[in-house]
Length: 308
Image (cartoon, rainbow, N blue to C red; front, side, top):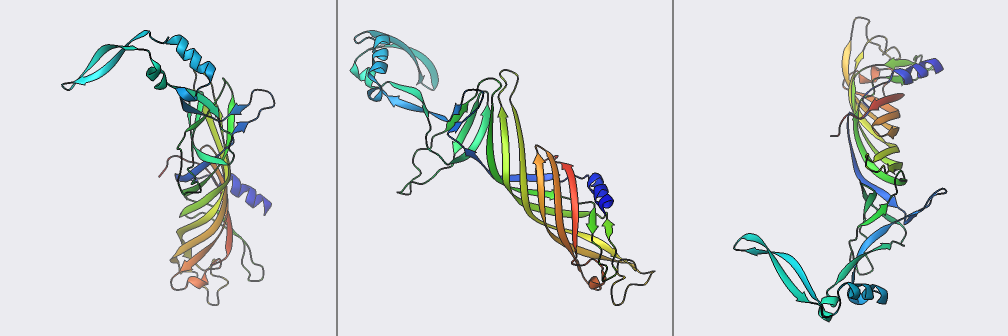
């Protein structure tokens, strides 16, 4: 028995997700990522601050660059008769000029429980957070946050998602039933299945490498429901437990409907899955099949070649 299962695991190599799609992938976004041997990484956002809201020191620095009463030459682009033309102009620095100034400042994000979508660009992991309604039912500000990484620094984030995979399980092990006189069986027939699962634990690492390209790796555990269809050829051997088995020279092809449960582990595009299921034969003489409505187990190891 153990040898059979070991052989099954080794030879059950298939495209476990030759068509695969993920939905509603949402990352958990901590406001601070702590490291034992290195600087912490804080979630930030860029805010636009008006001149009147700046500190006295920041206001004074702007006044020093643009002294009151001085002249400032600048260039703007205007659309004249359908053509874009660069125009040079001069303005006098006054209090109105100061009041129109806006500067961008990085601010730390302090709130907890953030979830959202991410994108890795250069040394920034950009976060577009889930929108949440306030007490008035409004979504409020729609800010975009980010982490900034130093060279060869890594951020790891947990996520959840839904996954739909089209797969085949080429080898199934069917259990023996001593009381009914049914022996164990390995089947190698073709089957087409749809696996709908929920990733209950997933993690992505984002590794920043300056000037040579970033690296991202993802692994996840997914549990879900399996439904599928296949066929079986009934004969004297696999109807032996029926009240009236088929004759030795008789064969009947029947359709099978499959329902089951599965657990898969994925690392990037490599997938390993274990499944338990039940096959239901349909049509006349379907009940003759020894393994009708009986449990089976199957394993699959594969590589996701493409999405739906």
